[in-house]
Image (tube, rainbow, N blue to C red; front, side):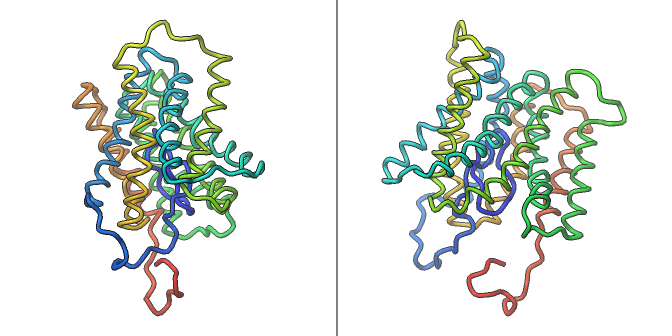
Length: 338
């Protein structure tokens, strides 16, 4: 899960796409009025990268016993519970407008239900590290579909260059010179398909959900609620109850939901509030690094030389695509973010 600010930005994990617009684009309070945090935002930033980066490892572990649809159900349900509890403690409320629930259902479909399930299927065919590498393409598809769907998003030379570089990196990850064949290519296509869903869902979220008049926590909880209903119906129709649920599988699914959705939401919210949206968005660049490290060191996975190289190219392209030239202070209107 992840939690998107009002403007499209890098997704946290594909394992956990941003679910709702966090208050990243709201004017930041003056430093003098902010309470001093108990834990430095840099540590929260690193914890967020670790949580999202290791999500692919947990997907692979859970996939040894559960079908992807049930993994998605488990992670969304265990992610919904802490968010709902947090919302209750803060005295928040869910939207009441039927139109808002309709848009939230569409958002959950593209940002949770389909990509979570696709990553689950991909995890059965490719190493978790490679799953995380494919997720690095998320910011590229977010920008591509934002340029196509949002009238206020304008293409620039730097953005277009970043898209070209990033997609070239995707081709390197695939090893196109070897051809597209086998389970590995199928798994990577599913993982990339999940990032395409993030690309579609993020501008939709910004256009139809971000201005709904509710807090990020309220929208995130409502989004997960609608997504949980959707995936529950799919699980009832297309899967059977598991014969057994070993403790490691339960722990993996709970980690995906409670940590990757619930705790990650709180961490991301804190980093955005304390360090700003731009700094928070760069967590995307650390997620594939953590995914590779977890897969290689903890699961003894092996990668071909082109896969980490392609990930580096993809990250470079994403960084170029998100680059915005800083304007002079005199040119920045009051209250605008540079």
